[in-house]
Length: 127
Image 1 (cartoon, helix red, strand yellow):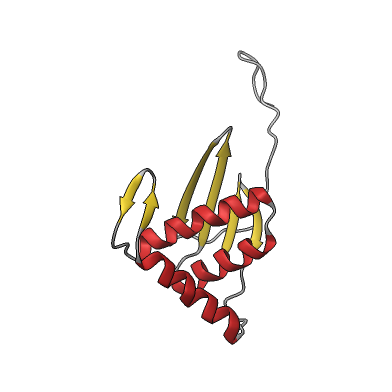
Image 2 (image 1 turned 90 degrees about the vertical axis):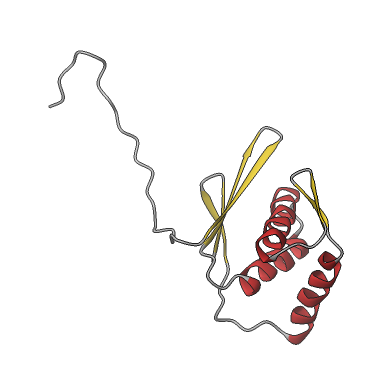
């Protein structure tokens, strides 16, 4: 699973590495805390489903990345990867104070290359 921030790959989570028992217990504790509900995008969610929980945790992941909180990054990323085994990417974009998060299940990031095309001015032919 990859975490992409503003178009750049920031984290690659290897699901093949097993988590230690203590970390798995912490993920269960996170679930218990979410059982009582939370606020998501300004709406109070009383009985969150798995996708709502993932969106909520992804919000914490974004905050942790921008706040450089390695412990919260590890916990949030682990929770998302373990609870959503089919998730391919978490895409986080920040524009001023606005943060958007997309959970992507259907595409894997292929090594992308940014290409700067020197486009000719209008009216000039391409050679």
